[in-house]
Image (tube, rainbow, N blue to C red; front, side, top):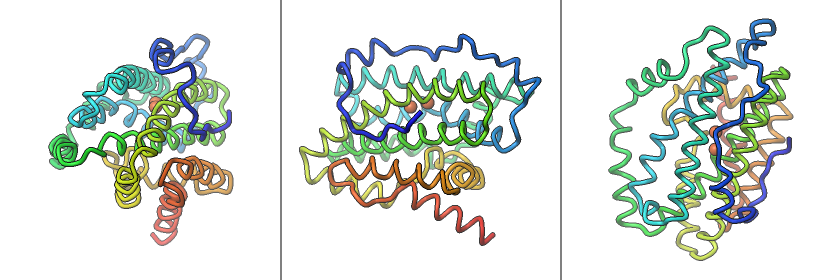
Length: 275
Ligand SMILES: [Fe+2]
Ligand SMILES: [Fe+2]
């Protein structure tokens, strides 16, 4: 599957996207087959990360809803479906971990949430205040969401390519298809909102350049973020994919030349070599 980095309008409109929203289809995914052909340790390490971050979506939603995003019915309709679909991505990855005798779902999620920092509790306050003082917060959220969905989809694609396991590949490609619809919405919203406001473009560019880091880096240990980024994107194929994602970001109004993913991967790879 190719990585979708086009900022095309939502195919069939938002109604079509929300009405097609569904729990991830798992028919034909033979989780029991992992007993005969288990995944390698590096792939499982990436899957633990992806499981935890997919299961953190509700907490990300908490931060979005304290902004003016909750006043926009198109955005809230999408977010309802987005959060539901991401939940089932997390559940599917949990089944892969379970098949390898690893803790997953509630057990892992509860443990992760117990370790969240005090700073995490302040996020709704920070986002709420940001939204009260700036009309551009929703545009920034949409641009940020597009970048995160692009990188997530690319990460799944890279993991499928690196793991070379037919059952995992099929599962990840099904997840990637739904991530593609998330991309359509976020990128389309970001394009529309940014094109209407040079101020939103400046603010989004500043926020992404100064604050963006790979999805999950706010809640996952730095060693895990570094491992995932370098395992998936630091080899020639990975860098090619990272540049393709960055070219997608380039096409959003006011956001060209940020090189977000390639920059992050290069930083982590350099740090790993120096360690
Ligand atoms: Fe997902
Ligand atoms: Fe997604």
